[in-house]
Length: 470
Image (cartoon, rainbow, N blue to C red; front, side, top):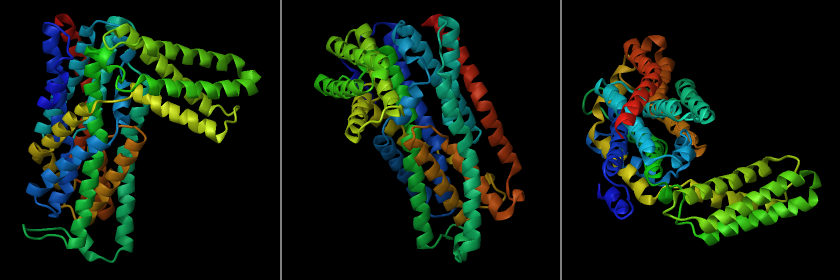
């Protein structure tokens, strides 16, 4: 906890009950990521344990370590996508108590559903849970404050990735398994381990350990970022002047990026008279951003909010310019604008290293403590037979690839659903539909169907409850 408390001491200027609520939110986000660790990350170690490639005493710390590294090295693209689900700009203009209601309702709704499904041993997506909770809290926000509480475009984008990823996992795993069955001549790859000492050959063991490592790392880089996003939501909701923009980016760096952008835009303006109106407006946006930069203050919310909006406006206009097919940009100019976008995004899309480290530790520790219930379901109950080596490796290769690509594109996916569907696909490819445990699959499907509506309703009701007392 000192990793969280120490960086905040001297920064928190809240008073009374809001200070208590703030630290309650911090505890809740750490709790959410801890539960995420033993709920979702158990998927990564299930195959390596049930194929006897590693004993639990080695597999769990190994997976926890790679989850930690995944969060630390995975960037913040997914985290920023999570933040964009809620009306962040609107929250900055409202009393801190409103942000407290929203954050607490999201976190507690997510934890309640995650703990319930974990207790029953049902693999359930923490991603679905959290996103459903954010939608529910956003809807409640709309009811009370009459503004857009949910970014439906972002919900659609994220929802598509959450729905398609398990379908892709099932199909690709089945195809890969069929390929292995008809191409490989290694009978050992399809062996079903039996007994305590029936371990895979060294080359297969290394393959399974490698796939476990990849799933663990990419889980951290994707799911761990969701915790980072929630942590940043707390900091921005309670202390917007300090955390809504990255004050560690020097004014000179931002000014340089704005000046370089303005030079390119001015050059284009001279050669594209037909674009004069929109390019002149773009120059005005850049000038406004420079003014806001000079006025920004770590203690004044209004000026910080204005600066953030101006920088976001410049980023948006640069992206539109880069996509404009009517303007043929020289290679050097395109590189200048791309570099400027990257630099300016560091102002708005960031997370302090201590936030990332805190979430990393919570996720890693969660992996090491509560893993067993979900592992048993994944390893024993999806199919009607024990996992063989090929099924374990196939499902984890597909899961690692899917999650890794999703992280690259900044899209959150469910490790639980991707891996579970991958195992189901590998089982079907091995022995047809009769090779699946229908009861377990029905429970997983039921949890999948119920997670979003339950999380939405829970968060909405909790927001209304907290609104009465905070």
